[in-house]
Image (cartoon, rainbow, N blue to C red; front, side):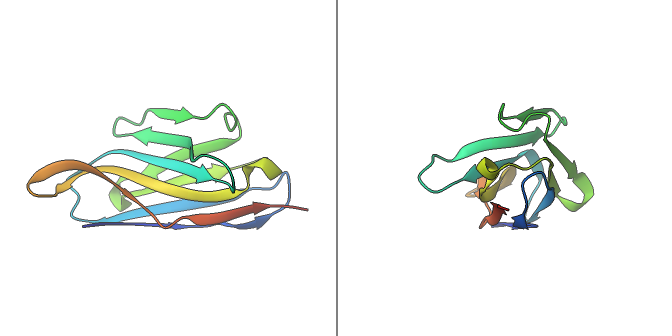
Length: 122
């Protein structure tokens, strides 16, 4: 099994910043990608940002220029730096990790964290 744990959520005023962390652990032979999603009440789950094994970065248009995704390979940890936060950024932020692990033999599989709440309010 692979465990995924997000931290760093909280309450911030509009225009403020937060830094989320996501640590993956367990039997991991390779990480293909680490992804940040968010889900707000009544909304579909949205891919916010991702980083691949080759360090290619992708962002949703709604966060481009404000959010930055990065990772520490040695720690199997991905970060999401969120700046200039807006009320519409409020959501549960979820980390998804695409890995090579042992699942009835070596297989590529993805795992989800429990989520961390981000609230943006004055």
